[in-house]
Amino acid sequence: MSMFKCVADIQTADMLNLPVPKANYHVEVIKPTEIQQEMVASLAERAEEIRAGNVDPTVDNMLKITNDGRKLALDQRLINPMLPDDENCKLAVCANNVFRIWEKTKEQRATQLVFCDLSTPSTKSTIGMKETEDGTFEMDYFQFSNAYADLKKKLLEKGVPEEEIAFIHEANTEAQKKEMFAKVRRGDIRVLMGSTQKMGAGTNVQDHLMALHDLDCPWRPADLQQRQGRIVRQGNQNPEVDIFRYVTEGTFDSYLYQLVENKQKFIAQIMTSKAPVRAAEDVDETALSYAEIKALATGNPLIIEKSNLEMEVGKLNLLKGNHMSQQFDLEDKILKYFPQEIKKLRERMAGYEKDLTTLQEHTPTDKEQFPPMEIMGITYTEKADAGKAIIGACRLIQNDGPKEIGSYRGFKMELSYSILASEFRIDLKGALTHGVALGSDIHGNITRIDNMLSSLENKCETVKQTLESIIQQRENAKAELGKPFAMEAELKEKNKRLAELNTLLNLDEKDAVILDGEGVSQNEKSDEKKSKGPWGIER
Image 1 (tube, one colour):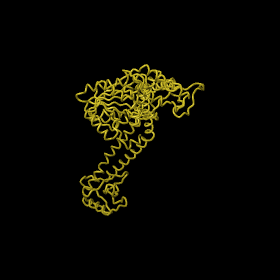
Image 2 (cartoon, helix red, strand yellow):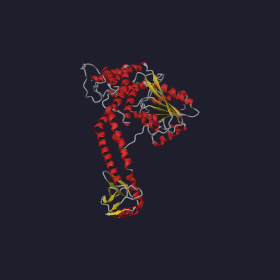
Image 3 (cartoon, helix red, strand yellow):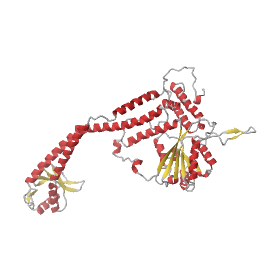
Image 4 (cartoon, helix red, strand yellow):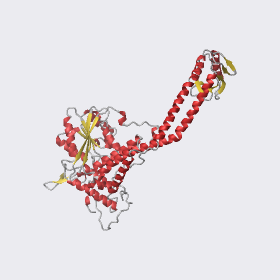
C-alpha cells in the first residue's frame, strides 16, 4: 500500500464531505417462528454429520447449509413453500414500513428501494397447483413462489397500485432500464425492488428516494456500500433518508452483518494505511464454519462476546502496531538518519564559515568600490566592463561542460549552460559551490552574483539552526526509544480471553470435509449410522 500511495491519492467518502442527505438507520429485529427455530437447530445437526465425514460433499456441505441458513433467515417458505406465512415475518414487517412511508409521502411522490439478493423473480419458478371441488387441478395463485412476488402481493393488498411497484428484473435491456429509472425519478414508480447485482452500481434514481430496505445481508462490504450509495447520494432532494435493515433473531442474519463489518474494517485499514494486520480471511468467502453454525444454532452467547472482543483486540492491535512502527522509526533515525544529517550539516556549516572568511578578506572597505573581477585572464575594475566580459564569455562557451573563466572576490568562477533550463549559470567555487543563473543585462548579472554572496551569512545561520534542531530531535528520540506499549497488559488479557473463547467454540480447529470431500473425520463413526439430509430426512 505504501508503494501504491506513491502513485495514487485515496479519498474515502468521509473525507470528501459531499452534499448528501443524512442517513437514519433502523434495525428491525424479527422474532423467529417455532419452525424457524427448529430448522436452525437442524443446521447444526447437518454440520455435525458433515464434520464427521458421514455425508458425501456432493449431497450436503457447509455452503449448502449456509445458503439454507440465509434463506431461512429471510422466510421459512424458501425452505418449503407449503409452510404457513407468518404475519410478523420479515416480508410482512417490510411491507408495513414500505406502505407507511408510501402513504405518508403521497403528495411529494417519494420513492423507495428494496434490496434482496435471495429468492429473486425467475421464469423457472415452480407453479403450485391445488385440487378443486370437482377433482381437477388449477394454479394456486396464493402459493409462495419468491420473496419479491410475496412482498408485492402484500403491498397490493394494502392498497398500493400495481403500476407503482416494479422489479428491476423486468428490465432486460439498457433501454428498458433507463426508462424504468426515469419513471422512478418522476415518481411514477414509487417502489423498486432488486438485487445488488442488478440494482447496485449505475442505478441513478436518487432524486426523490426517501427510504431503502435491506431484506438480506450480502457477503461483500462493497455490495452493502453500493446499496447505501443509491440513496445517500448527491442529487437526492430529501435532507434526511431512512435505511431499514431487517434481522431475524437467532438466525444467521446478525452474524453475517458482523462478518461484513469486520471485512469492511480490514479493507478500510488497508486503504488508509493504518493497519498492523498482516493477514485476513477471504473477503468473498461464502460459507460459515462448523463452529459458527453450531454457535448460532444453539444461541450461544459466547459468539457475541467473541465478536465484541475481536473488535476491541483489533483496536488495541492497531494502537500497538502504530507504537511499534514509531519505535522502529526512532531506532532507524538514531542509528542512521540523525548521524548522517548531523555530519552533513556540520560539514556544510564549516564550508559556509570558510567561504564567509574568504569573502570578508576579498571585500573592499569602501562599499562603492567594485571588487576586481578576472575573466579569461583579464582583470576588470569597472562593473560594466566585467558585465560585458561575462556576456562575451557566454558567446564563446560550447556545450562541453563547465569551464573555468576566472575569479571574483576569492572564488573561482565556472561558466556552464543548462539545456533543461535553457540558461547560462556561473558557479562560484570555494569550500562550497554557490550557483547563480545569468540573464542578458550586463549590470544585472553582477548584481545577481553580489546578492548571492551577500546571502551566505543568512544561509550559514539557517544551517546552524537546523543543526541545533536535529541534535534536539535526536535527544528526544533517545528518550522515547524503548518505552513499552502503554496498553500491553490490557491487550494480553483480552487475547487470553479470546483464545479461551476460540477453544470453547472450537474456532481454532479446522473443519473436516466442506466442499471437496478430502477431509478426515475427527472421531470414528459407526459405519451403520445413516446420513441425514436437510431437516433430518434419512437418505
